[in-house]
Structure formats: C-alpha cells, structure tokens
Length: 124
Image (cartoon, rainbow, N blue to C red; front, side, top):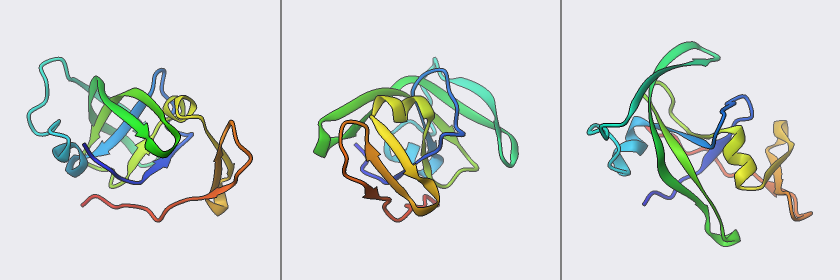
C-alpha cells in the first residue's frame, strides 16, 4: 500500500485508467525493479519529448478512502517523472472534476464543494 498525493493531468490522455509512478513510488509498491513477466515497455510522448516507460496492466487499485471511490489502473513506471500522475481516464473513474487548474481548485463531480490541491509530493 502507498498513500501519496497525485497530480491529475488531463494532458496524460490514455485509453484506459493509468497512474504514472516515479521509480521510487513503484519500488514502494514492489513493482520495481522486478517487473512482472507481462509488463510492457513503451514509449510515451511527454512535454519533454519521448520517454520510455514500463506499463503493468491492472496492477494497482487507486482509492479515495474518504469518499469510498476506487478504480483499477495500469501502473506506468517512469525514470524521468518525480510526481505521481493520474491520467484523464483515471480522473474520470475517480469522479474528479478540475475547476480552476491555475489555482489548484477541484471537486468531485457529485458534490458542490470546491477543494484546494494538496502540496506536491516529490519522489526522488
């Protein structure tokens, strides 16, 4: 189990729910360095250019415990990213709606309470 702050990135567009994990976070989940045999090596386009990642299908259950919401997601392991990133499809599954991204304001789709983002958690 890993409890961490994650950044919702709508530019992280995926066909299914995915959570990008820096290597240090993946180590805590025992997904790195011993990848399962069905792990995929892929190249993702990022703002910094193409990068190699390792994707493990349906590897993690992502939970928002105080809301009772959870979703199964592919774990995408990255050597270059330092924050945990939530893909657009995973944000959909977790019912997250971004209200004012520049101010870090968001809410759950089924409520009117506007929330402020947590401070980032950096995995180095």
